[in-house]
Image (cartoon, rainbow, N blue to C red):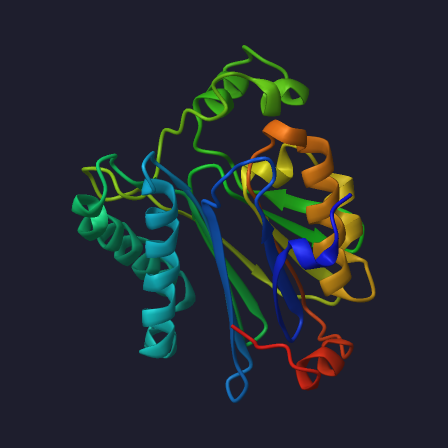
Length: 268
């Protein structure tokens, strides 16, 4: 049984994120949750690195480094939401390539990012890390994986129920860190009451169904929702399970996080 202390949890107004190693000896998932109080703007980014000899950790860390730098430079204030997320993905790609000589294996990473600002939600992704958009109990949309298994699904060669178990699920057709700039896929929605978002790596969505992810968003405290999701995914993944990265966000701001903030929690 996994305990709350086994997980690396971050929390912000209206959002919480965390990661767990699963059954892996190293952690190649990384994430960051950022919030500007004056502008009421949040940036949530999750990355799943790939590459042996430490390349995966290096790649996902490069994505998070790029996100932090662009946030600190306040680039998001000067660019439209979709353009900022495109800039983030291309900058992260170049950062991974800059880090390439540091390891013997070529590092690559997925990315999924969500910008919440002025009643609008913008998102972007490359690879098979996903974003789910919920409104109440209804899932309005899910990002489309850039994987060979997803291509087989589109061609009618496999069923959607078999997607997570298909041997080609981990063969990615797009990613950050390759020889060519990535093709980034974008999404947008005007926020409404009851809207919520789940960002996760494949270690989460392969073990938790869409309805389960939606239920995590309905937890009174998103911190508890993240802990529950990581615990359930780790348990189902077992000794050979993948790393897990999970971020939950919703349009209203819960108040329960304040107690832990003043009790010593450090916001990322």
